[in-house]
Image (cartoon, rainbow, N blue to C red):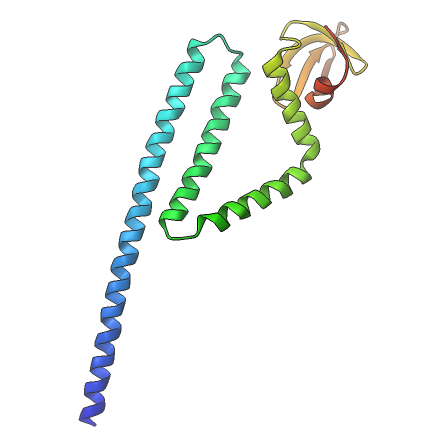
Length: 176
């Protein structure tokens, strides 16, 4: 009876020591991940401010400034999430592969929208027309009121508003 109590006490002591050791390791891992997150957020904010400052100094279209700023923020945030997950001890290669396959699936589901997005980027970069120009495209004609990332808004001479997807505008014929 005394021997089993002593064996039980040694067993519990071993379990307690194991829990304390693993708990301490987990605590340091969580602290490390938290520090990576805090430093990453500070760096992302710094980079965002730097990009905004650079874009303000240049004579760039306001829609391009907004688009570039949000794109950089999203990409850096995704990289930060991967870094924090890596600091927690998760294999980031499988996590990155999962993100890539999810991106392909979403890309295929949104292929028309992505075509309009890519068209918007092409229009903003190559500027075949700008706000205030009178254009004819896809059977419509009017003055460009606004160039958005997915579509372009025209005001017709008879005061109608026409919204044309940028995918067709970037690949079709256009009379400016």
